[in-house]
Image: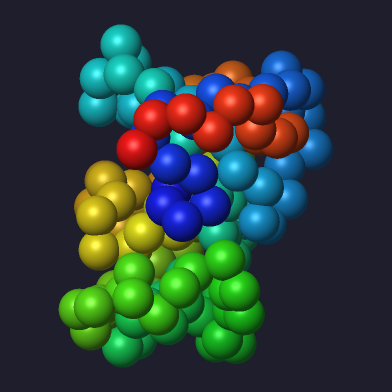
Length: 127
């Protein structure tokens, strides 16, 4: 999630995940190994179509403005053919796009795996 969050940061999360919106940062159990927890940003909502062209994200054909992604964190020209986010799922991505294991590689995240929403950082230790 760099540059937004760095490894070693300590964060506050809310267990209230009933209302999830685009741009929220969520914590969740990795669907391929529930013993692992990840933290990523909500990009796509249920029912939306997500596409990536030349590193830019498009939702239902309209480019998503992403002020939280720094140009240096998208080195490679990324591409993702249009994919529909199923009901009850979300498309998540890390802010450091070139070094993130996210929905681009394993699909949309079912809501049942989400257990928290990022509220803030209380310690900036680590790297």
